Length: 138
Image (cartoon, rainbow, N blue to C red; front, side, top):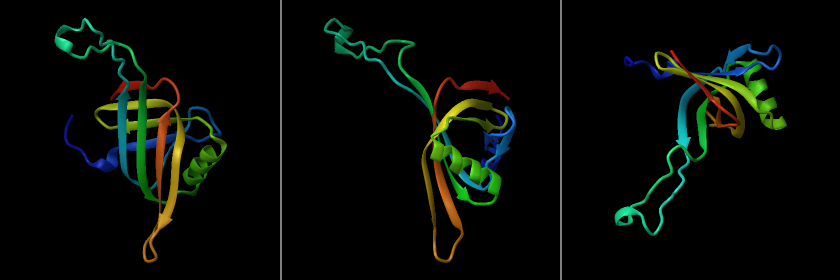
């Protein structure tokens, strides 16, 4: 994967009208996609040398996405707010060009609005995976 601009990482959500139709979340400046895997500790009194043993293949996998930015697109801002207020699991696409696309249902666990007196209105968002997340190499 070649070096690329952070602005090329895209967050898209299903528009809520046409299944499979995704729109880019406009105005997101900073975003992080974190893949997580819970561990299952299988250590017991007979573990060699008292070293921790982990159960391979066990545990809960999840994806957490955080982002922040400015308001630019009324349609995506409205869709995000509606999904948050209804606690709806919405299908998202998280695209890292020349690497992978992660897709699946996410719940919005945090949505914050703010702004400085002499600046633009901003928001931040946290998404939590709500089921199996597909990974497609790009």
